Image (cartoon, rainbow, N blue to C red):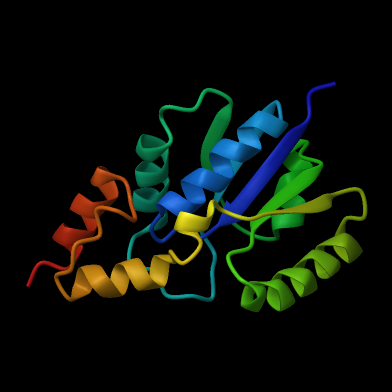
Length: 160
């Protein structure tokens, strides 16, 4: 039996913290689907297509992943893809309350799908897409936090 996991998110943009979680998930699962949320209540800097392309090129060194976008409930998408696990990253204790609530709701929606929490490497635990975008918008160096293609896209996006 092939075990498939899904790692959903807005990935606006994908960071080295995300990459760390995804790379570690690929060692645990036969296939990892990086699912870029198209419908989100959060305003995004990049379109769904741009976020999908940035994630695809950033993750091109991994073999057992699929990067795609989705709309609707993550549990429905996971079920359609045959994924039995939703992977979520926890950077800090502050993430836990929201993620625990989300995992509990997802379990109510599709009880056969489990949620697994992974923490990034300690040197990446402070990185968030929001902070990276803020630094980039102010002209700061983000090269330690994102792949070079993401840094270039952000520099273009925030060119004054």
